[in-house]
Amino acid sequence: MSTSLHDRLRRLRRGAVGEDAEAAERAPGSDLERLERALVVGTGDGLSLKERLQRLADAAARGRGPYHHPSPRPSSVPPGAPAAETSSPPSRDPFPARRNSMTGRSEDAEFRPDADLSGDGVRPRLGLEELLEGRRVENERGEFFLVEADASLESFHGDASLSRFRVIDPGTVAVLSGEPALGGFDLCDAAFLDTETTGLAGGTGTAAFLVGLGYVDGDRFRVRQYFMRDYPEEPALLRGLAEDLRRFSRVVTFNGRTFDVPLLEARYRLNRERFPLESAQHFDLLHPARRLWKLRLESCRLQSLEAALLGMRRRGDVPGEEIPQIWFDYLRRRDGRALVKVLEHNRLDVVSLAALCALACRWVEDGWAEDPRDVYSLARVLERADLGERSAEQYRRVAAVDDHPLRVRSLLRLAARAKRGGDHAAAVELWERAAEDGDWWALRELAVHHEHRARDLDAALVVVQRALEQLQGERSPTMHRVAADFARRRERLQAKRERPPN
Image (cartoon, rainbow, N blue to C red):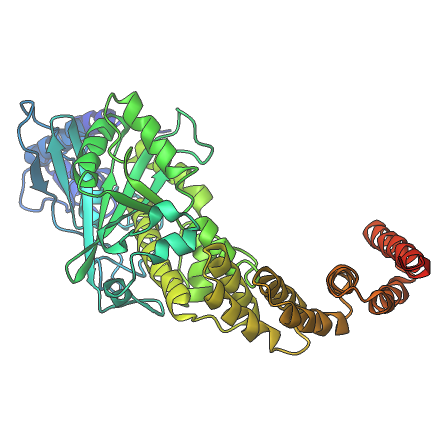
């Protein structure tokens, strides 16, 4: 039957008298020895029984285990006073592992929530300050926890080099996004933003407990992570984040236009703070990434792109849908081990976002695509940005690949461009090549050209009859309507031929 710690101490005081008690207290596996190991580490050899009991009582009153290092409460700071920063205790990683070259943190450690580190069935709690090389930051709104990391721009993130940031044309983002308003968007002056939240559905009840901010600083790429250890720290986190964001007039996200940025804007409004990004230019990589890579890749989620394009595989990563529950577990247990993985997940998201932006810009600037599906997608992106000759060059690359499903589509795009430019001979030749592969749209364009532009009714009838023979036996509703259109066209052409000349 379980009893409280103070009841057990009183029982020990009543029963432990005389020399027999002294012998009992040192007996291996005794209650006193187990309590000492759990609360104060060690058995207190050389101390009297009274001293040992007093030490146990003091530890019980404090309610702290040997691994608990509580953060000091934020001191009062006068309004307008500069924020104070205090260093946390040195990291005490209980799982020896390889250190990450960017963060200095454990890269392969397995943080097991139920691990028994004391050897006697008592599971100690490890605070974030013991696991991460971060610091507590105080400002006039309170206190939050800040973690910083950086890497040289000469380093690689997967297969991508961050040095690409030095040579990206500021006009490339406008091409990628299809938004002329983003012309001159310099990624070297942008903030790369990603949040981890208390829920994935959004709404006013959802808060961002962790915000990752990445940016280029000279020859380094830096990541700052703003973490609130409990809800009361949100105002301080938002104030500290705002102070850093105000120096950026551009922000980059991945699906942040519909989630991260509206969420942060709502939290600033609820905390009566001005949203620091309200006038910033916003480039969201999600839709440009889909336009560039969705024909080849099954998924365009950030981690899917990371694996397919950067050659990265995250080991032991936290699934995004589990992150809110991990934070709520932290609030209840105050054990930071599982949260270390969440912060690493967030850091990787920020760096991957930057690396994918650099890669997408390289594809646009250098025509770096190789797979015909990627080449066709790149051609569409360039065409959407009114870069006609550059897009035509990519379409021609696909059209040169025999028996590829996108060959006909590329020929049709080239023919449409030639038609708009008034080069009807080139358009006819491209339509003929597409018609050889059985494309009905190419046959329709040829029929229209011969009837209305070349005024060659016989040639138009030949094309129409060819199309009807090809469509014979098609039973889909769409093909049935196409065949009916060609049949009406044949009747009109025959009537024109039989009409006597004026």
